[in-house]
View 1 (cartoon, rainbow, N blue to C red):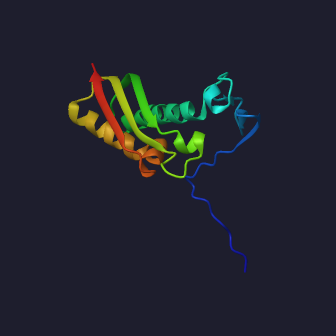
View 2: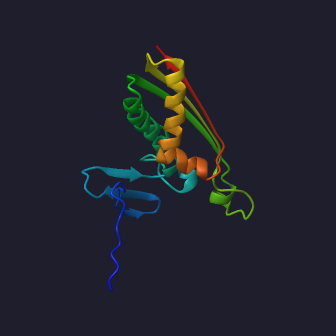
Amino acid sequence: MTAAIRVKPTAATFKLRSQGKGVAQAIEIDGSQHTIQVDAAPVFGGHDEHPSPIAYALSSLISCSQVTAQLVAKDLGIQLNGFEFDISADLDTAVLVNGSRNGNPNFEQVAIRAVVNTSASATDFQILQAETERRCPIFQLFQRSGIPISNHWSIRA
């Protein structure tokens, strides 16, 4: 008897491949015309010609939050007319750069500030933020890795 493996009908598979030299890398995304160029600052052995993996990780967090918020807003029947995000994160580089056996190579904390242009009620806005946090895969990736996240959203009417 043969067993068939069934993938969830809601599952999406993402495939990427890369080529690189030193710390610079070009990443191609299957099914897309886009290429992600990555480098690092000189202190990390790079030439700072492209964003770093750290910058991409943090930009993924805020951009995925915006995409997810649009999906949640549609479900709630509210209109979102624009976003402004500020993000900061503390990273102890002792493990990454110096190879220390002590410490944590993960972010020590992440702080997000979002200003959303919307006419949503205060109650709907609170639901929007909570549901965005719950449904956003990148937010959950950060949160479930144990990073303390301060996530403050406000309305710009």
